[in-house]
Length: 295
Image (cartoon, rainbow, N blue to C red):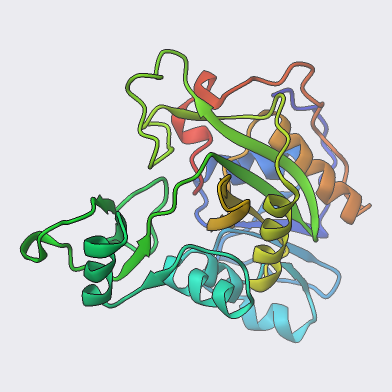
């Protein structure tokens, strides 16, 4: 990542991060030459300001002033709150016809699935990421040890899994999960995260059109202006299913450049302070793990 130095900072666009210590929010703000704002300090939103909400689901102290003055807010907190809660996400997506795994909050229904239909994904936390709180129960599990979870989904086999970045309705970046080197015999094919042997790659991928369509519809259904959508592709049924939507995805390399470029294109008062990487890495294992896990 090469930041182009410069002292000009626009006062018309600010980044409102989910936490001030967010590495990704810091990188994004630097890449477009703007400052971050606290939720509870002396920031005063003016009518010509643009607030880029980076994953914050809570309304700050200055929220009402921003609304009253007609400030442009990119990714409103209410929409982020839906995206960061898996049950609310699924409810909103299902209501809009976005294709998702079948889900329930009823333990008895989920147990019937695992008894008759196959594995069930038990979500023990609704706001976790990177498989936090996820337990996959294999088919035929006994009721005595079946988890009591706030959300259950049917496990659906997938050939591939993608992350599709959508900004203002347009797809700005696509990556695909691939095995880390040397992990072929030890990989977890059900939970495709870093600890299970998987990384993101962008070279040589050609996602089916339905993957892209479902991702765009997911962002629209949640009322978001941008986000990263995790989508699985079932080759047997020739269908894509949305698993998760991230309103503050990790940004490095080409993905950071593409978000910054999209913001500069949308708001001409901004200046790009980032050079496009000449040779993007093939997988995120070359960077610190915290740089690419969604926040």
